[in-house]
Length: 213
Image 1 (cartoon, rainbow, N blue to C red):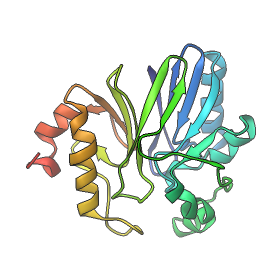
Image 2: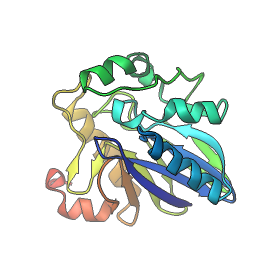
Image 3: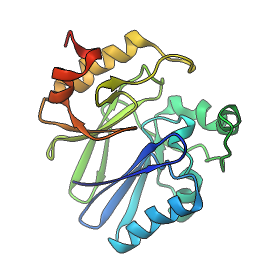
Image 4: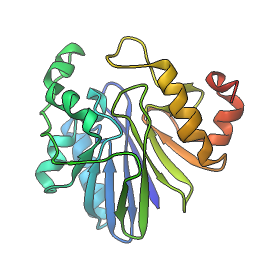
């Protein structure tokens, strides 16, 4: 699996295009401005990629700015955890609270849960439900290439925020990291929702929030 990252919007949120054999998934379309949306579109065109899935790790405002744009370009590809529905339905309220604007996404008709898989090209991503930062948080894991897109669960030297956001839980987040993410193995590269890529091994050794792991 090849992974192309982009960092967009005032929150510096990562958007990922994962692709293989001419097929692609867009994970967390954080592109807010027109030039950001066009940059992703031009990359897809340049690489001659067909988007077969538009995926969310979770539906906080900074991860969903570009959803409507890509929904209009690619029919019936939008998927997320069903606990994301209230966040999608309140996307305009989320935007107003942070002083930004958004073209509201639609509510998907297809949902993902723990144990589901998402396929494109020769790649199969496993879906892990990893709540704590958000009740709908999910990670996408390709064990064959030892890569995972983790959203706002685990970062380089940090973890997802649980203060000042609705429906968060530090104990739940730590359980998600301990029971779902760390067991993937130290060699797995993680692509987080913010900041640079890292590895599980590095975070197990150096992340101050994981001293007991």
